[in-house]
Image 1 (cartoon, helix red, strand yellow):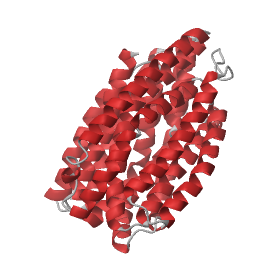
Image 2 (image 1 turned 45 degrees about the vertical axis):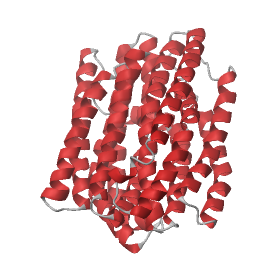
Image 3 (image 1 turned 120 degrees about the horizontal axis):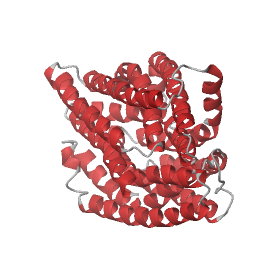
Length: 427
Protein backbone atom coordinates (compact mmCIF):
# COMPACT_ATOMS: atom_id res chain seq x y z
CA UNK A 1 0.00 0.00 0.00
CA UNK A 2 2.75 2.45 0.89
CA UNK A 3 4.69 1.59 -2.26
CA UNK A 4 1.65 2.53 -4.35
CA UNK A 5 0.12 5.30 -2.27
CA UNK A 6 3.18 7.44 -1.51
CA UNK A 7 4.31 7.97 -5.15
CA UNK A 8 0.66 8.33 -6.18
CA UNK A 9 0.20 10.94 -3.45
CA UNK A 10 3.22 12.93 -4.61
CA UNK A 11 2.14 12.72 -8.26
CA UNK A 12 -1.44 13.68 -7.49
CA UNK A 13 -0.56 16.65 -5.28
CA UNK A 14 1.94 17.86 -7.88
CA UNK A 15 -0.87 18.79 -10.25
CA UNK A 16 -3.04 20.82 -7.82
CA UNK A 17 0.12 22.34 -6.31
CA UNK A 18 1.00 23.78 -9.68
CA UNK A 19 -2.63 24.74 -10.25
CA UNK A 20 -2.38 26.72 -7.04
CA UNK A 21 0.72 28.38 -8.43
CA UNK A 22 -1.14 29.06 -11.68
CA UNK A 23 -3.96 30.72 -9.71
CA UNK A 24 -1.40 32.82 -7.84
CA UNK A 25 0.21 33.90 -11.15
CA UNK A 26 -3.09 34.84 -12.76
CA UNK A 27 -4.27 36.42 -9.51
CA UNK A 28 -1.48 38.98 -9.86
CA UNK A 29 -3.15 40.14 -13.07
CA UNK A 30 -6.23 41.21 -11.09
CA UNK A 31 -9.61 40.02 -9.81
CA UNK A 32 -11.23 39.82 -13.27
CA UNK A 33 -8.61 37.47 -14.79
CA UNK A 34 -8.80 35.32 -11.64
CA UNK A 35 -12.58 35.13 -11.95
CA UNK A 36 -12.17 34.25 -15.64
CA UNK A 37 -9.75 31.49 -14.67
CA UNK A 38 -12.41 30.17 -12.29
CA UNK A 39 -14.87 29.77 -15.16
CA UNK A 40 -12.27 28.33 -17.55
CA UNK A 41 -10.92 25.91 -14.95
CA UNK A 42 -14.39 24.54 -14.27
CA UNK A 43 -14.99 24.04 -18.00
CA UNK A 44 -11.59 22.46 -18.64
CA UNK A 45 -11.85 20.20 -15.63
CA UNK A 46 -15.12 18.99 -17.06
CA UNK A 47 -13.64 18.46 -20.52
CA UNK A 48 -10.98 16.20 -18.99
CA UNK A 49 -12.98 14.94 -16.02
CA UNK A 50 -15.79 13.36 -18.02
CA UNK A 51 -13.13 11.10 -19.53
CA UNK A 52 -11.62 10.08 -16.20
CA UNK A 53 -12.72 6.55 -17.04
CA UNK A 54 -9.66 6.50 -19.31
CA UNK A 55 -7.61 6.34 -16.11
CA UNK A 56 -10.00 4.65 -13.68
CA UNK A 57 -11.45 2.05 -16.03
CA UNK A 58 -8.02 1.22 -17.43
CA UNK A 59 -6.57 0.83 -13.94
CA UNK A 60 -9.33 -1.58 -12.94
CA UNK A 61 -9.18 -3.75 -16.07
CA UNK A 62 -5.37 -3.81 -16.32
CA UNK A 63 -4.96 -4.64 -12.61
CA UNK A 64 -7.39 -7.56 -12.91
CA UNK A 65 -5.43 -9.01 -15.87
CA UNK A 66 -2.17 -8.46 -13.99
CA UNK A 67 -3.61 -10.18 -10.90
CA UNK A 68 -4.59 -13.13 -13.07
CA UNK A 69 -1.01 -13.32 -14.43
CA UNK A 70 -1.69 -12.20 -18.04
CA UNK A 71 0.69 -9.26 -18.66
CA UNK A 72 0.24 -9.37 -22.44
CA UNK A 73 -3.53 -8.90 -22.15
CA UNK A 74 -2.98 -6.18 -19.55
CA UNK A 75 -0.78 -4.17 -21.91
CA UNK A 76 -3.18 -4.83 -24.80
CA UNK A 77 -6.02 -3.26 -22.86
CA UNK A 78 -3.75 -0.35 -21.96
CA UNK A 79 -2.82 0.32 -25.60
CA UNK A 80 -6.51 0.31 -26.54
CA UNK A 81 -7.10 2.91 -23.84
CA UNK A 82 -4.35 5.16 -25.21
CA UNK A 83 -5.77 5.01 -28.73
CA UNK A 84 -9.22 5.83 -27.38
CA UNK A 85 -7.74 8.80 -25.47
CA UNK A 86 -6.17 10.20 -28.64
CA UNK A 87 -9.43 9.94 -30.60
CA UNK A 88 -11.50 11.50 -27.83
CA UNK A 89 -8.85 14.17 -27.19
CA UNK A 90 -8.78 15.43 -30.76
CA UNK A 91 -12.56 15.48 -31.00
CA UNK A 92 -13.04 17.17 -27.62
CA UNK A 93 -10.33 19.75 -28.29
CA UNK A 94 -11.91 20.73 -31.60
CA UNK A 95 -15.33 21.02 -29.98
CA UNK A 96 -13.99 23.15 -27.12
CA UNK A 97 -12.19 25.46 -29.55
CA UNK A 98 -15.38 26.08 -31.50
CA UNK A 99 -17.71 26.35 -28.51
CA UNK A 100 -15.50 28.39 -26.14
CA UNK A 101 -17.74 31.53 -26.14
CA UNK A 102 -20.86 29.47 -25.47
CA UNK A 103 -19.17 27.38 -22.76
CA UNK A 104 -17.82 30.44 -20.92
CA UNK A 105 -21.08 32.35 -21.32
CA UNK A 106 -23.09 29.51 -19.79
CA UNK A 107 -21.71 30.38 -16.33
CA UNK A 108 -23.37 33.82 -16.41
CA UNK A 109 -20.27 35.58 -15.08
CA UNK A 110 -19.54 39.25 -15.76
CA UNK A 111 -18.71 40.22 -19.34
CA UNK A 112 -15.08 40.97 -18.51
CA UNK A 113 -14.56 37.67 -16.68
CA UNK A 114 -16.27 35.77 -19.51
CA UNK A 115 -13.93 37.33 -22.08
CA UNK A 116 -10.91 36.21 -20.05
CA UNK A 117 -12.36 32.68 -19.81
CA UNK A 118 -12.90 32.49 -23.59
CA UNK A 119 -9.27 33.40 -24.23
CA UNK A 120 -8.03 30.77 -21.80
CA UNK A 121 -10.32 28.06 -23.24
CA UNK A 122 -9.38 28.68 -26.87
CA UNK A 123 -5.70 28.27 -26.16
CA UNK A 124 -6.22 25.33 -23.80
CA UNK A 125 -8.24 23.40 -26.40
CA UNK A 126 -4.98 22.43 -28.11
CA UNK A 127 -3.82 20.66 -24.95
CA UNK A 128 -6.86 18.38 -24.55
CA UNK A 129 -5.37 15.43 -26.55
CA UNK A 130 -2.29 15.50 -24.32
CA UNK A 131 -4.46 15.81 -21.22
CA UNK A 132 -6.50 12.70 -22.06
CA UNK A 133 -3.45 10.72 -23.13
CA UNK A 134 -1.91 11.41 -19.72
CA UNK A 135 -5.05 9.98 -18.10
CA UNK A 136 -5.02 6.77 -20.15
CA UNK A 137 -1.29 6.06 -19.89
CA UNK A 138 -1.29 6.80 -16.17
CA UNK A 139 -4.18 4.36 -15.72
CA UNK A 140 -2.19 1.63 -17.46
CA UNK A 141 0.83 2.14 -15.22
CA UNK A 142 -1.25 2.28 -12.05
CA UNK A 143 -2.94 -0.97 -13.03
CA UNK A 144 0.52 -2.51 -13.30
CA UNK A 145 1.24 -1.09 -9.81
CA UNK A 146 3.77 1.42 -11.15
CA UNK A 147 3.06 4.78 -9.55
CA UNK A 148 6.65 6.00 -9.62
CA UNK A 149 6.81 6.70 -13.36
CA UNK A 150 3.68 8.92 -13.31
CA UNK A 151 5.23 10.72 -10.32
CA UNK A 152 8.45 11.51 -12.20
CA UNK A 153 6.54 12.71 -15.26
CA UNK A 154 4.11 14.78 -13.17
CA UNK A 155 6.84 16.58 -11.25
CA UNK A 156 8.84 17.30 -14.41
CA UNK A 157 5.78 18.38 -16.40
CA UNK A 158 4.22 20.67 -13.86
CA UNK A 159 7.57 22.20 -12.91
CA UNK A 160 7.99 23.09 -16.56
CA UNK A 161 4.43 24.41 -16.52
CA UNK A 162 5.22 26.96 -13.79
CA UNK A 163 8.36 28.17 -15.55
CA UNK A 164 6.55 28.55 -18.87
CA UNK A 165 3.61 30.33 -17.24
CA UNK A 166 5.86 32.91 -15.58
CA UNK A 167 7.74 33.50 -18.84
CA UNK A 168 4.62 33.70 -21.02
CA UNK A 169 2.45 35.73 -18.60
CA UNK A 170 4.99 38.22 -17.28
CA UNK A 171 8.04 37.91 -19.54
CA UNK A 172 6.18 38.02 -22.86
CA UNK A 173 3.14 39.88 -21.51
CA UNK A 174 0.63 37.36 -22.88
CA UNK A 175 -1.65 37.61 -19.84
CA UNK A 176 -4.09 34.79 -19.19
CA UNK A 177 -3.40 33.35 -22.66
CA UNK A 178 0.21 32.79 -21.62
CA UNK A 179 -0.92 30.77 -18.62
CA UNK A 180 -3.00 28.54 -20.88
CA UNK A 181 -0.18 28.15 -23.41
CA UNK A 182 2.31 27.01 -20.77
CA UNK A 183 -0.14 24.33 -19.64
CA UNK A 184 -0.70 23.11 -23.22
CA UNK A 185 3.03 22.62 -23.83
CA UNK A 186 3.57 20.83 -20.50
CA UNK A 187 0.58 18.50 -20.91
CA UNK A 188 1.58 17.51 -24.44
CA UNK A 189 5.12 16.63 -23.36
CA UNK A 190 3.81 14.66 -20.38
CA UNK A 191 1.48 12.61 -22.56
CA UNK A 192 4.29 11.84 -24.99
CA UNK A 193 6.60 10.64 -22.20
CA UNK A 194 4.00 8.37 -20.58
CA UNK A 195 2.92 6.81 -23.88
CA UNK A 196 6.57 6.00 -24.63
CA UNK A 197 6.78 4.04 -21.37
CA UNK A 198 3.59 2.08 -22.17
CA UNK A 199 4.80 1.32 -25.70
CA UNK A 200 8.10 -0.06 -24.40
CA UNK A 201 6.29 -2.30 -21.94
CA UNK A 202 3.84 -3.50 -24.58
CA UNK A 203 6.66 -4.47 -26.94
CA UNK A 204 8.47 -6.31 -24.16
CA UNK A 205 5.42 -8.49 -23.46
CA UNK A 206 4.41 -9.01 -27.08
CA UNK A 207 1.24 -6.88 -27.03
CA UNK A 208 -0.01 -5.40 -30.31
CA UNK A 209 0.51 -1.63 -30.53
CA UNK A 210 -1.74 -1.06 -33.53
CA UNK A 211 -5.18 0.50 -33.24
CA UNK A 212 -7.90 -2.18 -33.28
CA UNK A 213 -11.17 -0.32 -33.93
CA UNK A 214 -13.42 -3.01 -32.47
CA UNK A 215 -11.33 -3.32 -29.32
CA UNK A 216 -11.18 0.46 -28.97
CA UNK A 217 -14.96 0.62 -29.29
CA UNK A 218 -15.26 -2.12 -26.68
CA UNK A 219 -13.05 -0.07 -24.36
CA UNK A 220 -15.31 2.94 -24.94
CA UNK A 221 -18.42 0.84 -24.21
CA UNK A 222 -16.95 -0.52 -20.98
CA UNK A 223 -16.23 3.04 -19.90
CA UNK A 224 -19.82 4.27 -20.31
CA UNK A 225 -20.91 3.62 -16.67
CA UNK A 226 -17.89 5.51 -15.32
CA UNK A 227 -18.57 8.25 -17.88
CA UNK A 228 -22.13 8.61 -16.57
CA UNK A 229 -20.82 8.67 -12.99
CA UNK A 230 -18.29 11.35 -13.85
CA UNK A 231 -20.79 13.46 -15.79
CA UNK A 232 -23.06 13.50 -12.76
CA UNK A 233 -20.18 14.48 -10.45
CA UNK A 234 -18.99 17.15 -12.87
CA UNK A 235 -22.54 18.50 -13.05
CA UNK A 236 -22.39 19.01 -9.28
CA UNK A 237 -19.16 21.03 -9.57
CA UNK A 238 -20.43 23.02 -12.55
CA UNK A 239 -23.65 23.86 -10.72
CA UNK A 240 -21.59 25.10 -7.79
CA UNK A 241 -19.45 27.30 -10.06
CA UNK A 242 -22.62 28.60 -11.76
CA UNK A 243 -24.06 29.52 -8.36
CA UNK A 244 -20.79 31.23 -7.41
CA UNK A 245 -20.83 33.30 -10.61
CA UNK A 246 -24.25 34.68 -9.70
CA UNK A 247 -22.71 36.28 -6.61
CA UNK A 248 -20.38 38.53 -8.61
CA UNK A 249 -16.66 38.62 -9.30
CA UNK A 250 -15.61 38.64 -5.63
CA UNK A 251 -17.61 35.51 -4.79
CA UNK A 252 -16.51 33.79 -7.98
CA UNK A 253 -12.84 34.65 -7.45
CA UNK A 254 -12.88 33.46 -3.83
CA UNK A 255 -14.71 30.29 -4.84
CA UNK A 256 -12.12 29.67 -7.57
CA UNK A 257 -9.25 29.75 -5.10
CA UNK A 258 -11.10 27.73 -2.44
CA UNK A 259 -12.05 25.19 -5.11
CA UNK A 260 -8.40 24.94 -6.12
CA UNK A 261 -7.44 24.31 -2.48
CA UNK A 262 -10.22 21.69 -2.29
CA UNK A 263 -8.87 20.09 -5.47
CA UNK A 264 -5.42 19.97 -3.90
CA UNK A 265 -6.86 18.13 -0.90
CA UNK A 266 -8.88 15.83 -3.16
CA UNK A 267 -5.78 14.82 -5.08
CA UNK A 268 -3.87 14.26 -1.85
CA UNK A 269 -6.56 11.95 -0.45
CA UNK A 270 -7.09 10.35 -3.84
CA UNK A 271 -3.67 8.69 -3.50
CA UNK A 272 -5.38 6.16 -1.24
CA UNK A 273 -8.16 5.77 -3.79
CA UNK A 274 -5.57 5.04 -6.48
CA UNK A 275 -3.99 2.40 -4.25
CA UNK A 276 -7.49 1.04 -3.58
CA UNK A 277 -8.20 0.73 -7.29
CA UNK A 278 -4.98 -1.14 -8.07
CA UNK A 279 -4.98 -3.38 -4.98
CA UNK A 280 -8.70 -4.19 -5.11
CA UNK A 281 -8.56 -5.11 -8.79
CA UNK A 282 -5.43 -7.21 -8.25
CA UNK A 283 -6.92 -9.04 -5.25
CA UNK A 284 -10.22 -9.78 -6.98
CA UNK A 285 -8.40 -10.82 -10.16
CA UNK A 286 -6.50 -13.34 -8.01
CA UNK A 287 -9.75 -14.52 -6.38
CA UNK A 288 -8.96 -13.19 -2.88
CA UNK A 289 -12.08 -11.46 -1.54
CA UNK A 290 -10.89 -11.53 2.08
CA UNK A 291 -7.76 -9.57 1.14
CA UNK A 292 -9.81 -7.01 -0.80
CA UNK A 293 -12.05 -6.38 2.23
CA UNK A 294 -9.12 -6.20 4.66
CA UNK A 295 -7.39 -3.64 2.45
CA UNK A 296 -10.62 -1.64 2.23
CA UNK A 297 -10.94 -1.41 6.02
CA UNK A 298 -7.32 -0.34 6.44
CA UNK A 299 -7.44 2.29 3.69
CA UNK A 300 -10.70 3.72 5.07
CA UNK A 301 -8.99 4.35 8.40
CA UNK A 302 -6.11 6.03 6.62
CA UNK A 303 -8.53 8.11 4.54
CA UNK A 304 -10.44 9.51 7.51
CA UNK A 305 -7.30 10.24 9.55
CA UNK A 306 -5.56 11.79 6.54
CA UNK A 307 -8.60 13.96 5.85
CA UNK A 308 -8.66 15.14 9.46
CA UNK A 309 -4.98 16.12 9.30
CA UNK A 310 -5.29 17.98 5.99
CA UNK A 311 -8.49 19.68 7.14
CA UNK A 312 -6.89 20.89 10.37
CA UNK A 313 -4.00 22.42 8.43
CA UNK A 314 -6.40 24.32 6.15
CA UNK A 315 -8.42 25.66 9.07
CA UNK A 316 -5.26 26.80 10.84
CA UNK A 317 -4.06 28.57 7.67
CA UNK A 318 -7.39 30.10 6.62
CA UNK A 319 -6.05 33.62 7.26
CA UNK A 320 -2.56 32.93 5.91
CA UNK A 321 -3.50 31.51 2.50
CA UNK A 322 -5.72 34.28 1.00
CA UNK A 323 -2.95 36.93 0.69
CA UNK A 324 -0.95 34.46 -1.40
CA UNK A 325 -3.59 34.60 -4.12
CA UNK A 326 -5.02 38.10 -4.19
CA UNK A 327 -4.57 41.66 -2.93
CA UNK A 328 -8.34 42.32 -2.98
CA UNK A 329 -9.58 42.71 0.62
CA UNK A 330 -13.09 41.53 -0.25
CA UNK A 331 -11.83 38.37 -1.91
CA UNK A 332 -9.50 37.68 1.02
CA UNK A 333 -12.33 37.91 3.57
CA UNK A 334 -14.67 35.74 1.52
CA UNK A 335 -11.94 33.17 0.86
CA UNK A 336 -10.97 32.91 4.55
CA UNK A 337 -14.52 31.91 5.51
CA UNK A 338 -14.77 29.40 2.66
CA UNK A 339 -11.50 27.70 3.64
CA UNK A 340 -12.82 26.95 7.13
CA UNK A 341 -15.77 25.04 5.66
CA UNK A 342 -13.51 23.25 3.17
CA UNK A 343 -11.22 22.13 6.01
CA UNK A 344 -14.05 20.81 8.18
CA UNK A 345 -15.28 18.55 5.36
CA UNK A 346 -12.01 16.70 4.79
CA UNK A 347 -12.49 13.64 7.09
CA UNK A 348 -15.69 12.88 5.18
CA UNK A 349 -13.84 13.44 1.91
CA UNK A 350 -11.21 10.86 2.86
CA UNK A 351 -13.94 8.30 3.60
CA UNK A 352 -15.75 8.99 0.33
CA UNK A 353 -12.72 8.93 -1.97
CA UNK A 354 -11.35 5.65 -0.60
CA UNK A 355 -14.67 3.85 -1.01
CA UNK A 356 -15.05 5.29 -4.49
CA UNK A 357 -11.62 3.88 -5.39
CA UNK A 358 -12.47 0.46 -3.97
CA UNK A 359 -15.65 0.15 -6.03
CA UNK A 360 -13.96 1.44 -9.19
CA UNK A 361 -11.18 -1.10 -8.70
CA UNK A 362 -13.82 -3.79 -8.32
CA UNK A 363 -15.37 -2.77 -11.64
CA UNK A 364 -18.66 -1.75 -9.99
CA UNK A 365 -19.21 1.03 -12.51
CA UNK A 366 -22.90 0.48 -13.17
CA UNK A 367 -23.84 0.90 -9.53
CA UNK A 368 -21.58 3.94 -9.22
CA UNK A 369 -23.34 5.52 -12.20
CA UNK A 370 -26.78 5.05 -10.67
CA UNK A 371 -25.60 6.33 -7.29
CA UNK A 372 -24.03 9.44 -8.84
CA UNK A 373 -27.29 10.31 -10.61
CA UNK A 374 -29.18 9.96 -7.32
CA UNK A 375 -26.68 12.25 -5.59
CA UNK A 376 -27.10 14.86 -8.33
CA UNK A 377 -30.88 14.81 -7.93
CA UNK A 378 -30.51 15.48 -4.21
CA UNK A 379 -27.98 18.29 -4.76
CA UNK A 380 -29.91 20.30 -7.37
CA UNK A 381 -32.47 21.83 -4.95
CA UNK A 382 -29.71 22.52 -2.42
CA UNK A 383 -27.56 24.54 -4.83
CA UNK A 384 -30.61 26.33 -6.25
CA UNK A 385 -31.56 27.41 -2.74
CA UNK A 386 -28.05 28.73 -2.07
CA UNK A 387 -28.01 30.61 -5.39
CA UNK A 388 -31.45 32.11 -4.77
CA UNK A 389 -30.18 33.45 -1.47
CA UNK A 390 -27.15 35.05 -3.17
CA UNK A 391 -25.00 32.85 -0.99
CA UNK A 392 -21.38 33.53 -0.17
CA UNK A 393 -18.54 31.16 -1.01
CA UNK A 394 -18.91 29.71 2.49
CA UNK A 395 -22.61 29.02 1.93
CA UNK A 396 -21.78 27.26 -1.33
CA UNK A 397 -19.37 24.94 0.48
CA UNK A 398 -21.93 24.16 3.19
CA UNK A 399 -24.34 23.18 0.42
CA UNK A 400 -21.66 21.03 -1.16
CA UNK A 401 -21.24 19.30 2.20
CA UNK A 402 -24.81 18.01 1.91
CA UNK A 403 -23.86 16.34 -1.37
CA UNK A 404 -20.80 14.72 0.24
CA UNK A 405 -22.88 13.37 3.14
CA UNK A 406 -25.33 11.71 0.74
CA UNK A 407 -22.48 10.33 -1.35
CA UNK A 408 -20.73 8.88 1.70
CA UNK A 409 -23.92 7.23 2.95
CA UNK A 410 -24.58 5.51 -0.39
CA UNK A 411 -20.98 4.33 -0.85
CA UNK A 412 -20.82 2.99 2.71
CA UNK A 413 -24.04 1.02 2.21
CA UNK A 414 -22.72 -0.54 -1.00
CA UNK A 415 -19.34 -1.45 0.50
CA UNK A 416 -20.98 -3.34 3.36
CA UNK A 417 -22.77 -5.66 0.91
CA UNK A 418 -21.34 -8.59 -1.10
CA UNK A 419 -22.40 -7.56 -4.63
CA UNK A 420 -19.27 -5.60 -5.56
CA UNK A 421 -16.71 -8.30 -4.69
CA UNK A 422 -16.77 -10.27 -7.98
CA UNK A 423 -13.63 -12.36 -8.60
CA UNK A 424 -11.86 -13.28 -11.88
CA UNK A 425 -9.81 -11.70 -14.67
CA UNK A 426 -12.88 -9.75 -15.80
CA UNK A 427 -16.10 -8.71 -14.13
